[in-house]
Length: 294
Image (cartoon, rainbow, N blue to C red; front, side, top):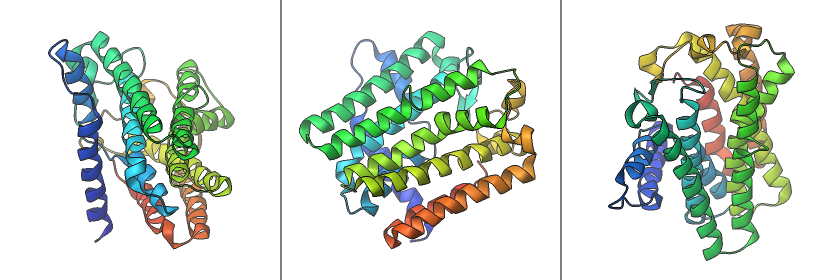
């Protein structure tokens, strides 16, 4: 199976699993279930859950044990996008090629849909830990919660919003990228490795690779915001410029930014090579992410 076919098969597997983990619509109030599903099933690359499952399998674990954590992470990622698109944040009208949640359901219900996905993600992981209480499951939940919370994505978002419209230096920009984007990818790989039973040393290597991938991923996002089209990205372009945000592109230009992202990607690939052929898929995925156009 070639890489694209492999990725599509993994995406379909995650889509099917998400259908089983998302709460079923009840008679009242149906709108919250509709709003949660609208954004969760709007498509997307499903990279983070793919990484959870791939990391688990790479260390010899069973993906069935990792699936609830993979699906929970995708719920958290979707909640973050719903809130990121709100008028009080980036104020974007389109995501993944269609209207954002607040444009369809209103700001109030979009906020609640994001809250619903976040809380249901925690419930999903807690249920998995309850059914199989061990350090592997609780470790996976901790890795994801940490990556998404005050030590990860949330803090990155806070600093990003705080400095909107203000000049920032490279250190502050790196802090934002490491927390807002890379922490969730690090959490995905650490969670997969933990639930798969990896040693602390191996978990740390997965996490380090995830951090490098995450920063490179965000740098490429900054580049695509300038060079791509709305049709390719499925969301408005030049949003960083609109929101007066400092990016790697504004600090270094496009070509130098590409070189920095490539260096980080190469460093992550070196970690996968060190860990052996069980990480071949993750190595290929890392190279693919640097070449993406959306």
